[in-house]
Length: 78
Image 1 (cartoon, rainbow, N blue to C red):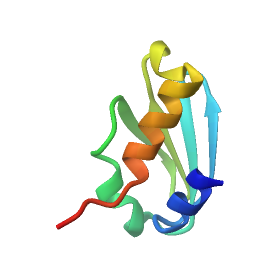
Image 2 (image 1 turned 90 degrees about the horizontal axis):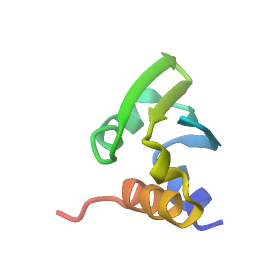
Image 3 (image 1 turned 180 degrees about the horizontal axis):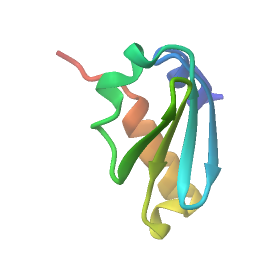
């Protein structure tokens, strides 16, 4: 629930963990821009609604993945 609330502000509809990627389905790519450089791994844009974040295997441990996503989805304070 926490990640869902955080994801909404970025226009993210769903987040699916499917090793070696975390797959984001998005409403509007323009909202996602600042988020793409915040996390570890590499980003691949599949189409205008789908973004894949490729992570190293250790990042898929449940607690680690949760912490990575929390960090990525937290807005930066000015």
